[in-house]
Image 1: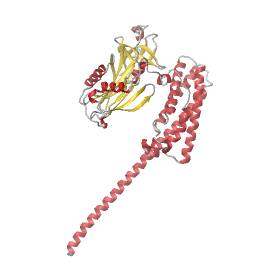
Image 2 (image 1 turned 90 degrees about the vertical axis):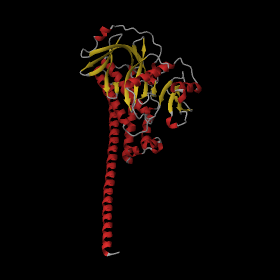
Image 3 (image 1 turned 45 degrees about the vertical axis):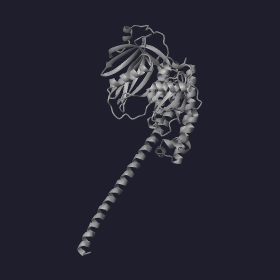
Image 4 (image 1 turned 180 degrees about the horizontal axis):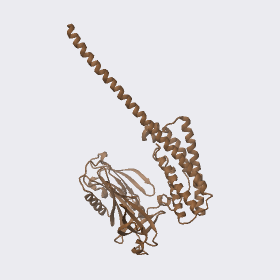
Length: 461
């Protein structure tokens, strides 16, 4: 090779080496930046988990102090203030608990305790607002709650000491994911909080005026009280009617629910045997009713209008033998629309406790979701109900600031598993839409709901 050619080849290799060097430096910088960003993210996550734990501990400390104060309180004004603070701190503690990476179900009783604590105190605050002092039975319940909160506080403080001593990081626990977190022996977080949960495995049943009361959560399903038990064959027949016989292949029992409503938990494969297209459905063992159904298929496009989809839902409910129902609210998500229906009696009275949800795919109008839990819990033959005050008297109880545009008679659920006939006044105030419910027997203002209109639907708060 001549010297001239050699120098030319050498220059080429020098150029390639320079390019590779620059690429390696760039890759090194990129890798370092990724590493630094991941560390920053992990640190941020760890800080969030630690802050949530500190907030939980502070809220439980406040709960214990407030319960101690309640034992020596003897005025409705002061009691109202204490109960309101208890409600707020109990709710805040539950929210903080939900931010800590713990396997779902590990703290179900603890969460239930915090829910009942906050809701019971809210119920008492409303009682105090009506100038009624806490009675002896309620004082006993507050004492029980005080003892339980003391146990919870001690466990949390011990856990905090253990975490500090062992250098345990919540962020490292979160990295393992739910599969690891499902095994208590492999997850320090679950193991630690398991000691907390043991404090509430046998705490007293609380019956009180609130939506988290045991008599509401664990109450009997009124819609199934007079029904007969069905076998698996009858449950499978119900599945075929609900989904369509031509869409049903193999049916496999994969679970057996034993909650407030016992069910057959079934997986329904399509006729071609493709398990990726399976539908999951729960059939009640009493009466053979569909409690819940989910078709998890992806809905990739939208072809139907909201009106077409809701018409499909209503027609479906009619073919399934449900009585007179009226559409109330809806919500759209991932090319589906979920519509809420409520019952109707005496041709015009809306029965909000008799509520069910139907989810419709917007590509072809098929039913991809169904939930009748509330309906089966509440539905029953109701006697004719007549208001004791007329509409004009009820209207006089509504704030004059509400511009009323519609009035209906409704039955609404009340805390403590009760129902009440009310006038529902729909109206506007300062650009916002509201429902105001006036008791049709005594004129009390039972509830106020704000109507939230979003791009994806209509909801209430």
